[in-house]
Length: 372
Image (cartoon, rainbow, N blue to C red; front, side, top):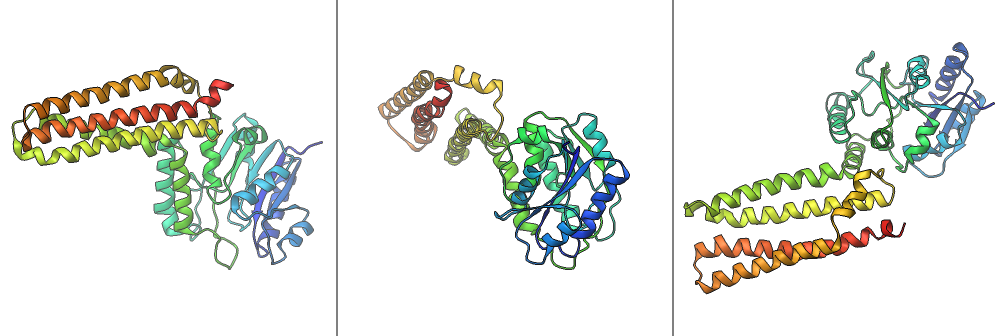
């Protein structure tokens, strides 16, 4: 019979601590009468970690492709349990007390996250920058971008069902694997729970594999790339509002002293349009390639925005700008006329042409849906 629980741990040169981690995992399952297995995803250890883990009774999977994500995925995909709990092999996780995770999984939750801030945080268990800066900031952004309500976005101790893991279709190779699990679970509307857990100082003497700033950036970059709304749309709307309000104020105000700001607001509006365009194109690409789940509103997008409608609006913008140009030159040009008429006319013309080009590219990206 397949085991109920697989405790999975990625490993790279953890000879000092891997034995105690495997022992704790086995002791937990034996004490609680859980039919399970311990899977080690070894990422090319050269210190004998594989032999130590096998001697303790763990199943060792050799993962050639480097990276925390690769090692974790290799071990998970080789496991057989209905439920999967991941932990690190540095003896920092409370592997002896996994009952809260198992209970939540048995209750029907798809993903159960550990929260190190709600549990007992032993002295020197987390570096200062991680505890008070990196983790809180990334957790805040993750909750904001993906509408979650977690207190610890990056706890390595977490559990999930095999069914949920298969739905997530994981792809990251490095430390951002920890973020991808939560992001995919949120995007797929899977049920997420959080339980308190204790974190201990690492049991090893060597330097940790985690690099504070490079790996922090990889997590942040991943969050941004999987949230085109916050990467492109929100900044675009803000720039557009500033550009529109500023331009209208200048056009309907007799204060010529503010005319020198007209090119700035015009440029800001054009930039905002680029943000919105990139949001739409990124959303289509990511959805068509399975990076983010397909929602019902996605198909409506192609229903309401068609190539013909885009070309029509773009042509109308271009025509209006030509009329504005004609009227301006006909009446003669001065500096006030140039800034109040020629600059807006140029913006409208550029928008019209961009809209025409965008409409063609938008339709090309949508060809996959039309043929399905």
